[in-house]
Length: 229
Ligand SMILES: Cc1cc2c(cc1C)N(C[C@H](O)[C@H](O)[C@H](O)COP(=O)(O)O)c1[nH]c(=O)[nH]c(=O)c1N2
Image (cartoon, rainbow, N blue to C red; front, side):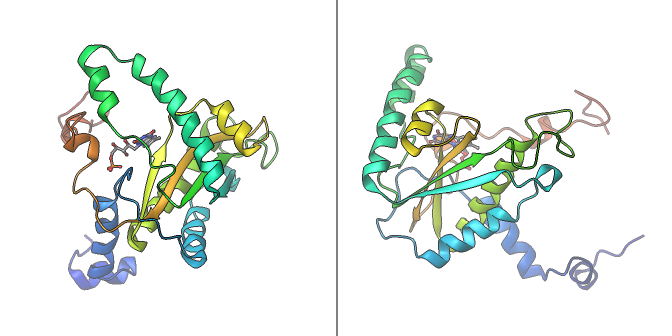
């Protein structure tokens, strides 16, 4: 049996204990940011590192279907915020009663406050029509793009940069504002900016919208619904 003492683990993984802890620290303390953005612009080298982290994500057939549209223009971000506001009003009406009131009380974006917007897109044509690994599920290219976003999000946590994912848009509005071609899918609008504090727990949890589920209820063994090992 493989020994699990500290030296053996470090030798096997190439990560010291402190490095392993740093990985988990980034994962556990990453937060979605809506309102704590500082106005300072992000230095180019920081943005470059975040995009490099994103670009090293796994992707189906190594197709790397992503693009990153960097939006510093306050005028463009204001148009994007207006598109959010229209969609958010539609979204509120999809909830009933007290839940609608609760929804309306939530701040769900920091598009204008964050100094940088990053629109992440997925080009399904990036490596031809038949893609290794996408042959039986066309969504795999979008899933790959989400992997890139998560890499960026975790790298941002380590850089002191807050990220807020905004998805409450009519996709056509974003495409029109940013000139995105018809065949390219919008996967995310990310608000990015330095932060000096983060919630300890998800803001939606702190504000009573929804709580984290117990992990053990989500893990099955040897088939759907089987909880015994
Ligand atoms: C695909 C997708 C889309 C969205 C989000 C996330 C993801 C993965 N989240 C953020 C989401 O609410 C948040 O991740 C959870 O509430 C958990 O909180 P932490 O990310 O752990 O802080 C999000 N948040 C928000 O305020 N407005 C939004 O439109 C969205 N959209």
